[in-house]
Length: 560
Image (cartoon, rainbow, N blue to C red):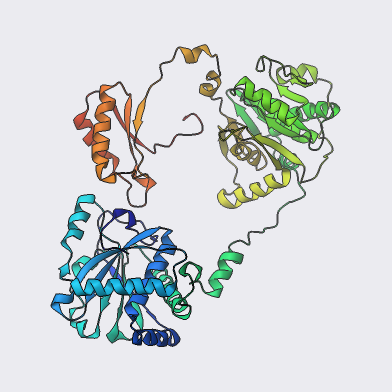
């Protein structure tokens, strides 16, 4: 425990409401009685030299550590004992060791209070100087320690403490009651009541178990433990566990056969047309031996045929393995070998090098001719909800790509989650995600099983980005400088210098744009003020670079 200011430890409780740009200093107070058994324990410890205030401050510190998960924290300490020369306002920083005992921690706090009280001579002027220079408040949480004889001086530091989010106190004259004055623009009363209840509960645990490591003590009531471990984890719901993905789609075909199911550029397919085309390919796949848990590769451009091919694999009983045409040839070859694919749906010219294994290739571009004799009727379903629906490979960023297997039951459960989260009212959905990513299951299958019209985005940028594309070679790569508001970095005090010097560098060295962050990425406004202010500052020191503001998040897909 140390007496100095460090911005890294300035934390507060997670607020219920966003912090306003300018505080209205609206305050409220919540009180919590200390149980008589705990109060009796405090009196016993006081007779042995402990301070009841130190015990409450220690419990407060531990609870804030738990709430914020911060390894260290700064708490303000207002000391008033009735003597002018022994009053002061200081900041203490605590670092809680997981194995430190309750008694040891309380003794450390008690010694610090005694030292601060003996040397206190009014508010520490460095607190406001440092806080003003850094742009960070010296502390957001304070503890007010006052003896009964100091009651008339209760407002000595009211101006300083009014800037705090929370001010906790225990007055001797008020008996064993913990009070918390709080910023009512940030917190609801029930949040503060729960917080004080946890402080009092942990105080009781620390008094009753002085030799126990503080990290092993709990402040949760039995009903809270039940709520967290059982109630919040009881997410079981009833859903159609016996239905497969393509069966859900076929049921939707019965409900809306003439509605447009798919659109791609100027082409459209109704639900009945999409179902019939998928059935014809599915019959051929079934004849090629595709059935439950048989992996079928699909390497196609984004098109109507892509969706037709995916549905046909599921209808045949197999599981699809997406092979994105923009991937390097070596990666595609590895995935084919690793998955043991023996049937592949593709389009002419996409796989220039045929697989070096025994693979039957079905060209979807020629499918209408080759499959003219196949039935348009639904196939008899094979497999169970635990049968594989698809296998998607990871990116391989940490090594060799690994295949992740997903069953029909997993997907049906996901569908239910989407129904509950965003509803299932019909609409038009733009499908932009590669089928090599799980989110495509939402965009293509959940939508088609719920009666949406799905518009397949072509994404020429990704298609032209394949290795060897001449269009890429002719394009000039542009560079932009982006600033992120969520990361304060190693030296937040230099944030404006970083912004302006970086912008000047970008302006001199041919960068296309400087992007400043929008505020919504951080609860308290982030590292920089709003983008109109930062953009004006950048414009004042640059000549040619473009100035933009945005979310500054690199998307998985091409921004439309």
